Length: 305
Ligand code: KIV
Image (cartoon, rainbow, N blue to C red; front, side):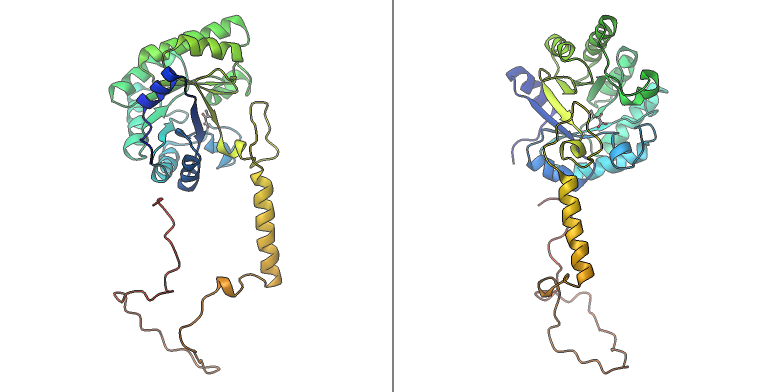
């Protein structure tokens, strides 16, 4: 296994011009696969409110849910840096809340850092979390937790005033101790300027190619939802199609009685004769007896070996 990715690795990547590959993950299986595929950073995004829970925004996501999914991803990841979102209202009310909730994502969830949305107005919050030795990733531009303030999911920073505000916010986050900043839904020229002005890495989503890294929601890049195709998403697979086809074949085989066949069924070690109408004697199982060959169902599903 290559060395564990830390916030220092990511800073070095920026210095040497190596692009940072970040992707969302919400469970251990995806975390393991995406890490094997080469992810540097796994983000437990509050986008799980949409892609996992079926809401139309990230707003209903709770701290407990974030901790639950973060712990699952952390169990599936070995090398990648694990960063978890602070959900809506977990850090906006008070700095104390923010530090305590960031601490939960690290202590209970196993995250290596946290991400929060907002600029200069959250500089003190970022400072307090960093003071508690928890690295913070910022998030600027189209910030989904501000959907009502933005009037929808709309590109930010197209005008000069807004662009300047985003640059100032990015500088304020860096100053406050953030180790990286996500730039979402902003013009590519603005993202390039912010990237050049910061010494910490920028991670883009809908922000052009000049950011220090890129992030996508894993379900989007894998083509899980044919109805969701915003301009910034490129689909690298059609898992919706593959899953529909695979599951459809399984259902058809079940209906035909073709599954399970012999290959996928167990056989008794001796001929068992059960007289018609007689109840079979209860099996006497000694729980301490070693399992015989063929008794075990197979590898244990869980943490990667
Ligand atoms: O919640 C999320 O998945 C995110 C990324 C899209 C950056 O914040």
